[in-house]
View 1 (tube, rainbow, N blue to C red):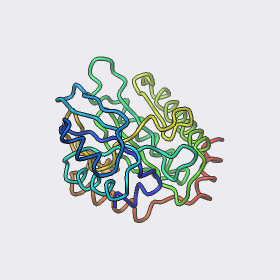
View 2: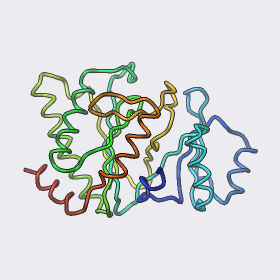
View 3: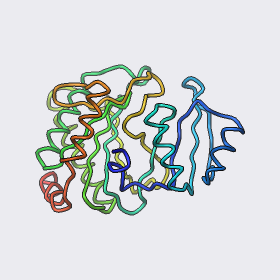
Length: 243
């Protein structure tokens, strides 16, 4: 299911978050055919992050299996010109504790979900630790600039709704992927991961609330099976949101 859902993203490169490290680990990864672009150690429990490129298909399959087994978190990059997936990355913009739940986040996610659904682009909403990822999947690739403008306009309407209800929109930080201004720089974790700080599974948020791990996989499968957006449907959504 992961391969099918993320089918439009490049599979020759990835960022891997893992607690494994050292020359033996790198030798094993490079022996699989991938090239190392960089490695770093994060403060969250001595987590290590590696970006690999020129990755053969078999090695990507191995990383996906390790991701599902929770042995690592796999993060993929977007295509540099066009994509059949786009994602709103919403984070709590709190300066001291960005993992705390805030009412602004709950409301803006619901506002954005309604805007997208009303335009015919239902999103898969996944908890990301500091907020949520709202993924939309297209049946064919669309130019990044058009995807980006649609996301910006949709988010502007959601933030306006937040403001009208008396909430501070500055408490929400929004990023949009793919971003034509930042090519092959930012990656996003795939569904099925454990957040590196709170070790919580990436739960799906339905209208009934956050789902458990098994229920989240069921919601993911249901979305994959029936919510892919046609290109014609996306173009209609662009018109509706732009009004």
